[in-house]
Length: 136
Image (tube, rainbow, N blue to C red; front, side, top):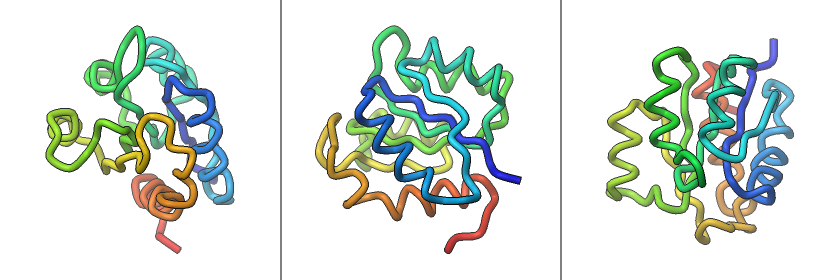
């Protein structure tokens, strides 16, 4: 059975790039996308994803506030993919404190058009592991 993946990022372009990365894996199914934390909370309730790929900087409700809220009703594992999630940053530390499975920094800022080239394999492997699947 395929693992259900939710992508949360305010950028349509970044959601598309991340979806393209994840969709290559036959064991993963991107069931939904959300453009901010408010939208993500509703989508999480509806789809009950196994793994959430979560940006931090978003309008209306940022990723960390969203994470604090959905932890109350979802067991989904979280992989943070964000430009502000550099090693040791306050946002990265907070995501770790909340229980993020992994934190992957976008390589070229908020609009990392090179994400697939620079981090695609890392993202796929990380999502597989977070979903309880073996790496390949």
